[in-house]
Image (tube, rainbow, N blue to C red):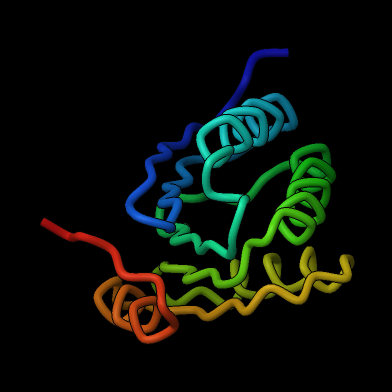
Length: 133
């Protein structure tokens, strides 16, 4: 099946920045997971953080959710410490993300922000600065 949805990944200091776009299926989830592991290989030696932009995410299929659960377990096992989730207020997105996290034993400190600067400020206060220039 063809992948639906897209993403962008980049690293800044000890922070992986991800932008999730569109409606995802399992194939997109698998591609994302594979690329995320590659791009974060040098981060996982010590605690690290993520910024996840979800404003343009349109949720996903049950197959993509299964991949997300595997991803959360991998992130937990590979020293991800903090996640700033950034998106416009959406109870549906908030409930969907929380439902997936609740299915895992993740102890990752996640915070939601509707303002991206607040998310970056929080990460900096937690020891994960990002060069915004």
